Image 1 (tube, helix red, strand yellow):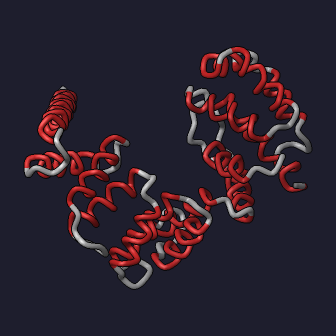
Image 2 (cartoon, rainbow, N blue to C red):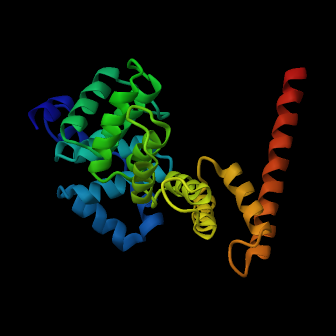
Length: 278
């Protein structure tokens, strides 16, 4: 950890002082966990408990208090947390208000996280190769790193591996492999939606519209990337009798969600048009 000590100022003292200078942070954690558990978390974190440090940092992140999370992630990184290192890349890239960008540090912690086989860092690198973000676009390299992150247990990466197989991107196309990997990723919203498509269309497996409905429902509940399309597919399948005895009721609820979404989009379009005319 010599590199990390140099990166964060020689030892943990700098991060400790930052934490102690933010007493209001306690009340944010207290609001989430209650006073007793909040005090326990801070005591454990001050004593070097990495899980407690990460818990406190996440609490600040959830409260949109990113500057308070930074020193806790730095302390956890010094203790050897690859997760903390990965989170720090976003801070040093300047993605959060109130935290000054430091591109050199961002690159250093990214490399360290990759060397420690952090699956989220590997997934990010895969996505960069896939889209050509900061590197030359290379679908084969993207697939390689998606697979590496997937083998480390990252569900989102498993879904990406499945989609690479489905579309033949960076690897030979294979419906059976696509279905297999999407099945492994079915605890992610992205996985839910694409696994639903496999069951609905019979990709890599036999058609099963009831299962398709089940996964679409999970995708909608999790506000998946393809939310609008998932909702419309559900309405269509509910109207055809799929989705169990409550299909009619559920169809009405989803249709109302679609109507509300369409209304909001119309209002937004009107606001944009109005602003452009002023």
